[in-house]
Amino acid sequence: MIELVGVGKTFNPGRDNEFHAVREVSLSIEAGRVTALRGPSGSGKTTLLGLIGGLTRPSVGRLRLHGRDISALPERFLTALRRDTFGFVFQQFQLIRDLSVLDNVMLPAVPTGRPHADIRARALRLLDEVGLGRRAAARVQWLSGGEAQRAAIARALINDPPVILADEPTAHLDSALSRQILEILAELRRCGRTLVIASHDPLVFEMDLVERVVDLRDGRVLA
Image (cartoon, rainbow, N blue to C red; front, side, top):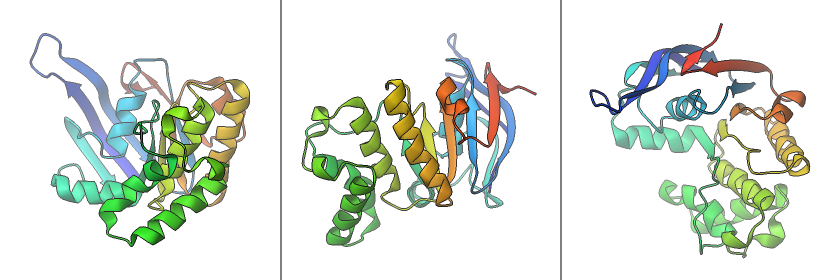
């Protein structure tokens, strides 16, 4: 489904602070499975996740989705592809302060042009599914860490994407809350979605969730 061929990402090329975050990664990610990117901080997990989801463009190499090369797509086409294909769960949640939980979940669907009532109804259903229905009207800064992560998952699902990309989804949570989040992700897998999770949390790998582990160090995939 998703194929990376010799992909690399260099920041600040040609400058004194040039940094190779990802180096010559070739990787295939199968549809309907859970793939984990594992490695210490600075290993390139987050950058690789952003490359997979089209949030950043590769400096070298090719990224293919269903056999189609999307590496050099014009930004407006890439934006539409990201919106329809990927749901993102960010490590720092990326929720917008002073907006309600419901408004945050609805935001990614606004550019689709779907009726507001339909978007709102779907957002409310998703919040119910992650156990946040009663918090829909709350401002996001009032949420606990576990609630914020569940809101972020609901937001990632608002456009019904086939692929969920989660960056350190348990990083700011205790063990009990981490298991709750991982159970939600496991349910998404059972519903047929593809998941790619970047993490170094042992809990992620102890639970019966991950089907394939890709180890990273210094921006490279280890054999």
